[in-house]
Length: 214
Image 1 (cartoon, rainbow, N blue to C red):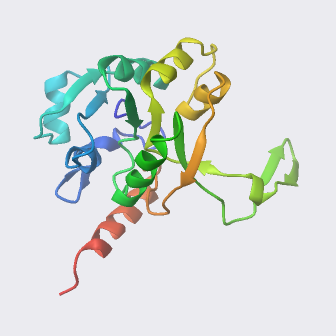
Image 2 (image 1 turned 120 degrees about the vertical axis):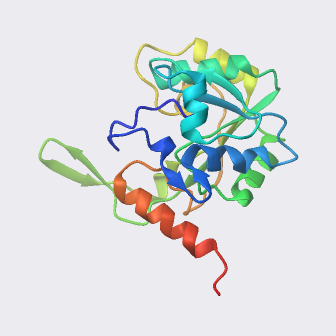
């Protein structure tokens, strides 16, 4: 999923330099090099020409490129329709530090489940804010989800066709509302989503930390 406008980042973050390429090229490359993944489909911004996206993203591999839609759910639908696979992984291009072990966990669990989502428990105190009042939430009952998320493609496509009119920012919400049983697996702390400028600094730090020290 690389069709975002990057409104919170104030620029298309998928084109930022990262490691030996860009955020989108590194994110896609993580999946392209795996033998257990048949095809990588990149959903790009609908306001861009495909050739311009490839050039800006420094995409040198043979990817399937599909233009996105107005909302995220529209972009996901287009990606799902472009795939003929029985099972799919949906990943945010803005998560270029996704470790292979996390992909392993999702794929392994997907052999027994129709919907698999990586998640982590919060380590900080979590509060619910309503107006000027706050109340604590039980951290043991709260999770935050990540990608890649694994799904039975036909079932998720059906779920998206049944979706309501509101905007959906995560496929697991669509799946749950359609009655799919969603299984969670352990996420990865380094698999952060590039959302704000400070996230970019942290991701570059992670990249330096992975390189062997001389």
